[in-house]
Image (cartoon, rainbow, N blue to C red; front, top):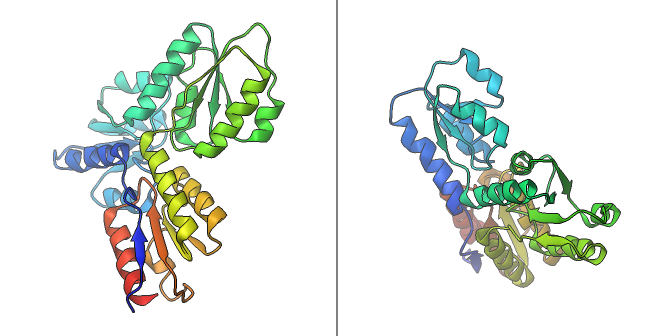
Length: 284
């Protein structure tokens, strides 16, 4: 049965994810030992595929001590200043695949903290991107994830503050948090560092989910930006499904007569999106 199925225009790989993916793909052809410092992307299918081609994921600097020299690729989420410096001195060839939008945050945090500002990072404190951002501050940083934490944050009257955001944070929640912080301090510089691709993807998903009878969000369970897309879509469409691959929905979706919308996180491969789109168009 053919039905109306709409795929968000900007679903799938963003610039940073594409850059990291291709860095590893091209390095494999060099015929030398290849390592990624942390999973190159938050997508288990991509990581497994690279591992099958000999790419090894290194999660801690100490692991490099007993490994043959080769090329190490820094994950798209970036690393702390201390980790970055140690990698540069490791004797391995280093390729920095940190997303340029994340690198911009590193520069902001380093500059503002060096000039005396206290750093506030809006994001998930356990996410590797946020951990890396915190590590570029000269005097530490506070991570705020929600409005409750923002409301409880204690400002020092003699300090100035700089607020940045995880690139994939929910833009509406970021604005809520910023408004709470700005009500309680005048000496605060806010840098909206949510990347353009994330904002566009979230805007598209929000608009489509308001029209859809059923929404499908494709992304890895570890992907922050995919989770945010699910939250946005679920708020507008009760029948929203968060999946990693086609097998997650085969024979499991309800029959619907209205529009079916599809979006996908920034580290979702094109082939998975196409498989899901084809199945939904013909079988749901």
